[in-house]
Amino acid sequence: MGTSVTKSIESLGPYLRTLGMVSLFLVGLGMLLEAVSGYIDLGYGASHGFVLTTGDGIWAALDTLLLIISLLTIIASVSVQRGVFPQTMVMGMVLLAILSLLVQGGGMLAISISPPSWVSAAALAIAAALVLLIGLFNLRGPTVGMKFTGGIFTLAFTILLITRLSAIGGAPGGGYSLSSYLLYPFTAYYFDPGYGFTALGIVGFTFLVLAAYLIVSVGVIFYTVLQKSRLVPIAWVITIVGFLLYGIEMAWGNIAALGNADWSYVSSEATVTVTPVITAIVLAVAAFVVIATAITGMVFYGGNLAEIAIAQLSIPQTTPVEATAGIFCSKCGAKNPAENAFCGKCGKKLG
Image 1 (tube, rainbow, N blue to C red):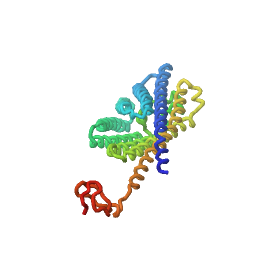
Image 2 (image 1 turned 90 degrees about the vertical axis):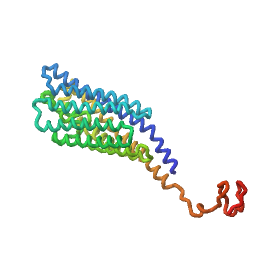
Image 3 (image 1 turned 90 degrees about the horizontal axis):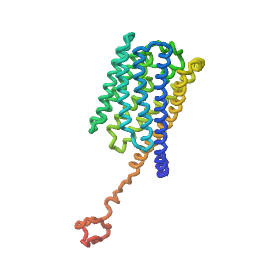
Image 4 (image 1 turned 120 degrees about the vertical axis):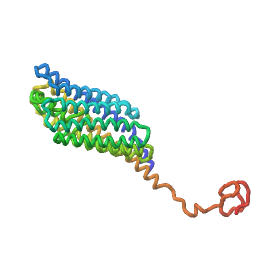
């Protein structure tokens, strides 16, 4: 029974890699489409005589960073299918996320109509970027102490993001950027400089996303401590719970964006709404693949933990009779039955 369960758990490995590849690819494709949506939005506005503002320029910069991150995500999906952790790609994505926070924070300060609450929110965005940069440096360090410090900094980074969100005034539900394209008339949305990037950000901004980051940060801390231990699956299970929450937020947000869309507006302004609609559909599908990947991962790594626990419990205990039965030869060290008078190996008299 135990062997069959073990084989069943091991058989999940290839499926986990395939699901991971598909989910990363779809998420990357969704980010790519969302970046394209931003470019179309700005181009449409410029072609209709709207004046591009500082906020729009910063929005374009964030779109460009998102575009690069999307390409790295798609490339990383190939590594996952091969069973290789895409470390270089992940580091690149994190560095671009750090840069996006710096652009975002600086942009919030650059807009002349910025309300007072933006100043503290901008400072927190910049602080979060710097803290994450320090954390990334330490996670790349050679010692467990440096890696653990890096894990603590990633946790501090998430706490700063949560504080920044509170400074902005909270967050709506998921799919907010897509809703901006689908729910509101283009002109009203376009004339509000920097409206989106103050709350948005490539690193995510809803409370559920930040809860996911918080759990992933804890998983990173556990991994730095347990990475050379048989208990490292604990860190993976914790981290995967974070990705499960992220998948739930993706599903909720994108389905809500589609369900609440003003379809008369969507059809009348198809030039700027067609890519957001496709993006919402792609990300909604991706969300369910992410959820399936997370569940499979929890079963896989949770099964590994169960196997470790069973192995510990099934270690045979030596009974006193087994421990004392037999006589060891003083000359060659061989163990002999208790009834032997002479060593069966070297012939020396026993006792």
